[in-house]
Image (tube, rainbow, N blue to C red; front, side):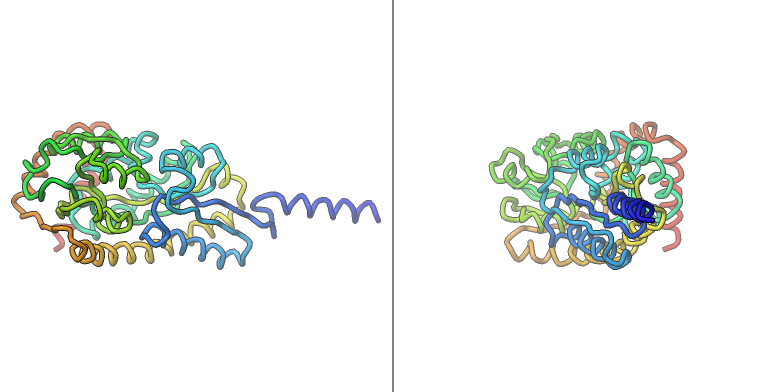
Length: 334
């Protein structure tokens, strides 16, 4: 009897050390590039809170904000290696691993949040997520970074010619760099943590990010002009390390997915509210803000058509036609 009791005790102790085992405590690190008060950071904080609630306090996740654990590329690699459990990069970070993700980065592809939400939350978005486990990652839902607007220290951008010659920050994704070139600027790859200093020292002239991010990173301190180009859209994608995921029970996996989907509604609302308030805040702080005339938007869109032609073949013509077809349907419903 004593031997059976001892064996049972050892089994329970061992179970407590195995992620996903019934009653076991599970912990994880969530790496975040932007500050905690940003739309990204607030979404992560809400996700952590929901996971805690839904798991009855059994799954504990700690957020590490403002690039404390590295930039998006570094942290995504850490997820694949299993040393970090969660992160939430923009989908562009994943295009080197899942080529089809590039469809979301086509310049001037989307015009409205409705178009974006329909594509991301529907069958197309799901098929893209299904490709991630093959590269050691699991996608939970799509959150919002937002529509990208251009800032620079030289002059307002009102026409496509105003991009000419600007040293413009880019991430390492090829489609982003080719878009900047097509518009006439010179791409300079930089991670987010390096951006403020590069703009302050005039290593680069400008950059493109959502208005809420421009405010969160305090770029108005080092940039004079904000032009509402909406030249591309960025989606955040909360990811889980597959090595971590594979150790979880089905119930715990469902907890994470449900929390990410529920947090999505909150995070998108925060992102869209911050986009509006950030524009007013930046203008009040001294930035010169300008809209782009519809005719000039069309000219910019025409200028990047070589990017569409090049990358539609890379992502696959079937996917390209499906996405553009769905977007056209949405616009006809207006």
